[in-house]
Amino acid sequence: MNRRYKLALATASIALAFGVIPAKPAQAATLSGPIYIDAAASLTDTLPLVEALYQKSNPNVTFINNFGASGTLANQILMGTNPNLPVDIFFSVSQAPLDSLQSANKLIEGTREDILNNTLAIITPINSTISISSVQDLLNVRQVAIGNPAFVPAGVFAQELFTNSGISQQIQPKLVLGINVRDVLNKVSTDTTDTIDAGVVYTTDALTALDKVKIAYTPPINAYSPIVYGSAVLQQTQNLDAAKDFNSFLRTSQALPVFQASGFSAIPEPMTTGGSIAAGIVGLMMKRKLKVKAKAKAKAAVN
Image (cartoon, rainbow, N blue to C red; front, top):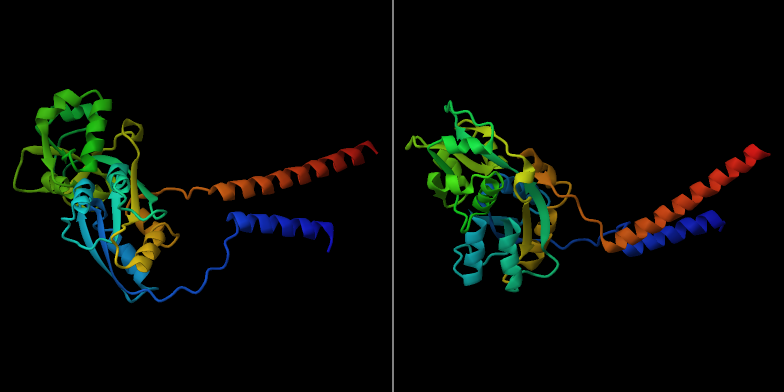
């Protein structure tokens, strides 16, 4: 066994031990039964598409979804009043709802994952002639719909947008509060009122109703905190294996393009500590190899 082969074998062994080169997975057992999911209302259109994709490889798994405001769903799980019992997976927008469940020891350790990002959009009715070229222009309209900040994360992000844009106090009398982000979308697009001139929703929600609303303005993303979607398996699950498998599937190269096609953006997979160590070792070895080559070239040039 020559020296180069020994070096390569040692490098591969280190990388495998620290997770850079994945080991071949064992044959998975057949998964079946229903998976109950509580999910943010903004996932209403996209999550079923991801579930259908998963079912192609797991035809015996079914899904029962309950969509709503993430804060409301988290509170129902905490109080045991959720109509979608027993909940297996919670798929939330914003960190706070998941944090509350984690603090109450409702999540299975190691299953919480950050999966997606979203952005805010200011929308107006499709037939509106109002021009909005800044957040401050919302002060010129009659009413603005946002999610109720008490339990709708989209409303929290909207209020943060108003604060950072310097209009927090002035806009409060104009606000109409919705029970979730889809309710806000409906309030702006509805034909039953003509007093709500604009609303603040997630971009992905606006894209689902471009026949009823239009995106009048896209605020800069540094005007509010990052909008992060995360999921986790709950301690109360009665279908642990399937729930954990699907929860992991949400971050895969099969699932993420489905979310991205709906306007979400994927959060890059973080490198594990082990992976960082192994990558650092491999990188150091490559640098040494290049250094040796450079010395050899310089010596040859002198000779």
